[in-house]
Image (tube, rainbow, N blue to C red; front, side):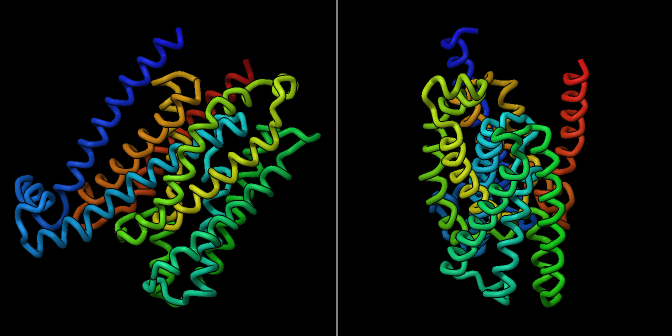
Length: 345
């Protein structure tokens, strides 16, 4: 397929994805435990009506939750595409590789040592959590590259094994620290780590925006480099590109986005795995198309998962991370089987 046809296909599929995301946005905004009609919702949203209860539900509860869902889905989808490109492994994912677990460990440790009370989430506290989360993610990424490298090159098979081991180790440490918290904080930490955006606030939105505004355009700008990195190391060196330097720069940006995401939503697994795979099927293999499309697919996955979690199981709420895991686990097994058949063939 020519580049022109691929670009046309990307724009058509991208617009369709955005329309679908807006539909889910609408359903999320108009549904919930507090009954609001579509007319009441939009009259409140556009400032026509000023009913205190309606404004509280829309602007203090539903809108922050939806915006956080959009930002989290966008970042996880894009990070998944970047990590799969950097590692040249289509099974790479922030959760599977242990990066999300490391960020979660750092944040829980920060809450335990510094905060002492998870309810006190001032702007300064959120910034501190973001920095700690970024450090935890970078430590995990460094360990991943060191332990999964063989003779200076990243081994895709070893990468998954090391990632699973790191994920288990960081998860165990997180649970150990959580058990040292008081019962109320432990319960909140458990819900948060399972992946939930039900307690979203505008403060959390503001904490994510700098990462999204700065890092995402940078990663999209580096899409052509990611295309080159898919070639053999000798070919990449022959083109005059310092592969390791580019991988480190991309990884630093990706870890920053993961940290910002985990701070506000906990560890939502499988979005970074599913979104790039779906995007490749829709728009081809060029990262100029895969990265933004993965962001759109990630938004759809998170918003849909959150809407299902708060409506299908009402009046109880199922965290979005659990809903997506129900979908993601069978798909991950399918990918493993398919890749095993390719290797055997």
